[in-house]
Structures are given as C-alpha cells and as structure tokens.
Image 1: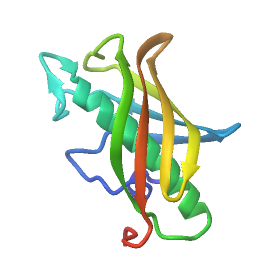
Image 2 (image 1 turned 135 degrees about the vertical axis):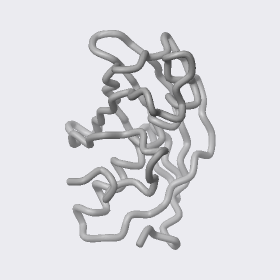
Image 3 (image 1 turned 45 degrees about the vertical axis):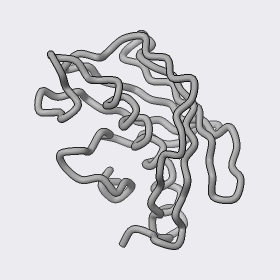
Image 4 (image 1 turned 90 degrees about the horizontal axis):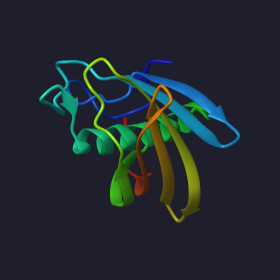
Length: 139
C-alpha cells in the first residue's frame, strides 16, 4: 500500500517511506534520511524531524487500520510528547526503523510508545499523545 494513502502529509514533509505492518499489537515503519529532507541540519536529522517521523509512523498505523476496514483515514494531532530521549541524530543515508506500541486508548486519545532505531543503534524513544479527529476524516 502506498504510504500516501495512510498519512495526510505530502512532500516535502513526508517522513515515512514504508509501513511494514502490525505484529502483536506493535506497528513498524521505515524511513531513509535523504539530503533534501527539510529536517536535516549539518548532515543530521534534527530532534524535530525525529518527533515528526514518530508522529507520522503512528499516523501510518491508524491509516492502515482504517483503510483495512474500508473507512476514511482520520486526521491526528500531537497532544504532547513525553519522556523524549534522543541518543543520537541520524545522518543522511540512515534508515530509521520505528516501532509504535499502544499504551492506552480513551475517547479518541491514543497514548503511544515509540522506539526508533537505525540498525542495532537506538536513536530515540518517547511517549506521545495523539488526538484523532474522526469527524474531519481525510478525503
């Protein structure tokens, strides 16, 4: 499935290349950091870029679930980012592999836990609250 069917973002802000699926409740995405990335500074992805990548990885999960049911994909909004730990800033050419687990879902608010790696190296972890706008679903 084309990633653009799963997320609302468009170039130049697309921060996920592939949705790899869901296994045991955890979803997986990949993204290659390219030199034309708007979140690249001095050859490295910025912290803001990592946060956006994690948010889009969570959005791809929601998009996949809604598309699988034949429903329109809702827009999501970051409510908060907690416990962000950035161990390194990935360099241009790095492939980010990100796992998104659901901690809790209540009344349209989802608390996710994200783990982002490049190869065996831990890049970043965080928790993020995401609000889904199921009334204004993406056309």
